[in-house]
Amino acid sequence: MMKRDIEQSAVQVEPVAVPANPMTGTAIALPARPALLSRMGWSAFILALIVVCALAPLLNLVVPQDSMFHLSDYAVALVGKIMCYAICALAMDLIWGYTGILSLGHGLFFALGGYAMGMYLMRQIGRDGNYKSDLPDFMVFLDWKELPWHWTFSDSFLATLLLIVAVPGLVAFVFGYFAFRSRIKGVYFSIITQAMTFAAMLLFFRNETGFGGNNGFTDFKRILGLPIATPSMRMVLFVLTGLSLLGFFLFARWLVTAKFGRVLQAIRDAESRVMFSGYSPLPYKLTIWTISAVMCGVAGALYVPQVGIINPGEMSAANSIEIAIWAAVGGRATLIGPIVGAFIVNGAKSWLTVTAPEFWLYFLGALFIAVTLFLPNGVVGLVKKLKGTQK
Image 1 (tube, rainbow, N blue to C red):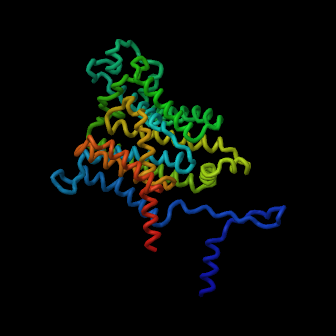
Image 2 (cartoon, rainbow, N blue to C red):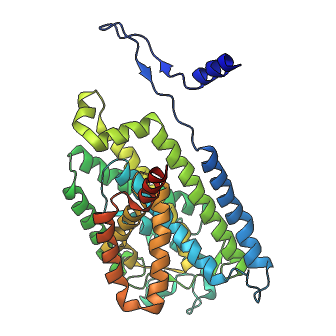
Image 3 (cartoon, helix red, strand yellow):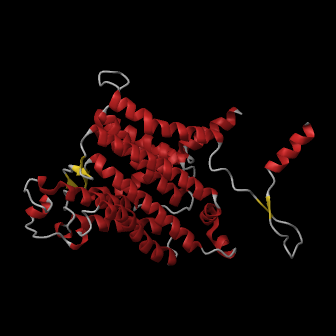
């Protein structure tokens, strides 16, 4: 009986063998690809799926408002917004935690996705605006007679979905190609990403660009012809955001456990050795950079209908820096850590901006300093360390 158990155990951990090295005559054993999630991980994932798709809608739409178990519309909107931020933090972890590239411009991709969705929502207002015109109110106010060329497909939901992915992805691809091809890295890359975001913010502030100037887009009324300010629509957006977050988490996990992810981590740790081994870092860095930007664009598109506004302020340097803080607080190169960090930081922000708004920025700065000095691996790293000491 014991012999059979040992044989079965040996089969389960057997490495993947490749042909022998002709120079040394020895076989090279490659590690088998790890499971997408552990048994506990799948349990937590299914639990999160149940909470997002069943428990939250039940507590918000079915449980009476006077019940202590009722989930308020404010809580639904807040958690939905934080889940959008968590997608951005997850995207940051792929590019910073696993590839070693600190971006201070991801707020731009978030805003581009938001503006693509905002343009569609503005067209959905129709003649219900203040000026009773087919044009958005800000265009009527500026005495515009027709839509600009970049609003051509804004009345199509399918075209909007395509633009949400294509615009951030294309901007990231073009920028990343020239930056990575020039081998710009480290603090220099962080500075030019921040400069790119700041330049885009100044561009969107201008009224003649056709993006609403400093006011941006607001006063949304419908999506797909349905009222947007109803509890049921808010819950639909909440569920879609939760499913997107869970889906992106699985996708990111699949990426980092594959050979592609191992190459990314090798680039992070020793890019020159990767090049010496025959791999070109450019396609790997460019691919993960573009994927990360698209994830932020989707997050921005989900954010706008839930919050009800999008303006150039979303492109501010502070917003991009906050995305990096969420990833650092939760724990880089963990995937789950940035999600936890987004919930911790933004939960604290929502509470402090109500109870002590003047101390919020001081708290954020102190938090980042404390994490840098005492928790270099973030909250998730601390938990893993405590579990290790308990064993």
